[in-house]
Length: 295
Image 1 (spheres, rainbow, N blue to C red):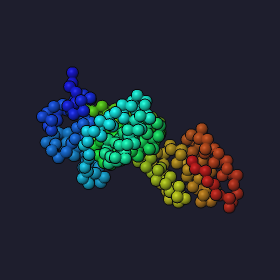
Image 2: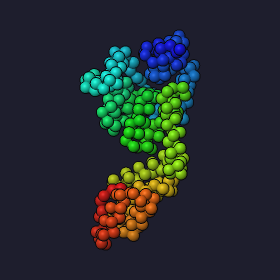
Image 3: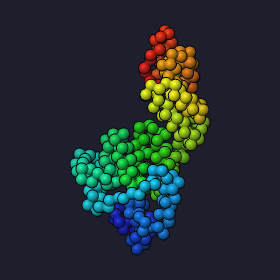
Image 4: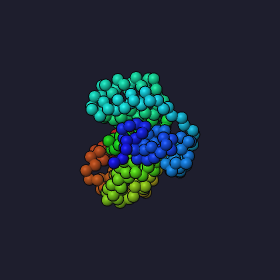
C-alpha cells in the first residue's frame, strides 16, 4: 500500500522527492514545489523537455509561484465545500483569497473549480488559464480547463488542453492517464464521423475559428478563404459551408450562397439553420443581399 504524500498528507505518494529526503509525494505537490533544486530529478528533466518543445514561446519567461501553507489550507477547505455542494461557503472563502492573493495559482484554480461547479464554464476557463499562466506546469488546472471546454462542447480546445496534460505530466499521474484515454476515444470517434485524424481535426477547427473571427468583423472575403481552408482539411464540415453561404450573400453572390448552403444540407440534411438561411437568401432580390443571421 502506498504511503500518503509527505507534503499534503492527503493524496497517495507516487514519487520519491529529493527535496524531502526521498519521502513519497503526490504528483500535484511535486508540480507545486518543483524548482531549480530539482534539476537531478527525472520529473524535472521531463518537465523541462516539455517546456522546451511544447511551450517554448509561452513559457520562455521565468515564473515565480507563491507557496503559502495558510492559503493552501484555505483553498483545500473551499474545495472540500465544493465537493459537498456547499457553494456559498466555498465562495465566501475563495472571494477573500482572490482579494488578498490574486497571484496565487491555487486561489485562481479554486475560483475556476467554483465557477465550473456553478456551470459557468467561460469564467472557469478564465481562472484556470490564470492559474496556468502563473504556474505553467499545473497539470490539474490544464485538465480542468479541458473538462470545461468539453462541457461547452468545444471539442477542439478540449483536445488541445488534454494534449497539454498528456505532454506535461507524469505518465503515471491519474490526470495524464485520463487525458490520454479521452484523447484516444476522441480520435476514434473523429475518425469514424469525420474521416480524419485528431491533428487534422484540430487544424481544421483553428481555420474555422479564424473564419468566424473574420465573419464577426464583417470581413466576408477573408472569412470565405478561411472556411475553404477548413474544408480542405475537413471536407464534411457542414457549418463551414453554412457560414460560407452567409458570407457569399453578404458579398451579393446569391448563386454561390445557395450552392454553399445546398452543400451544407447535403452533408447534414437536418441542419435547420442552413434550411432557414437558404430559404431567406433565395427569396432576396438583387440589392437585398444584406442577410445577417450567422450559421
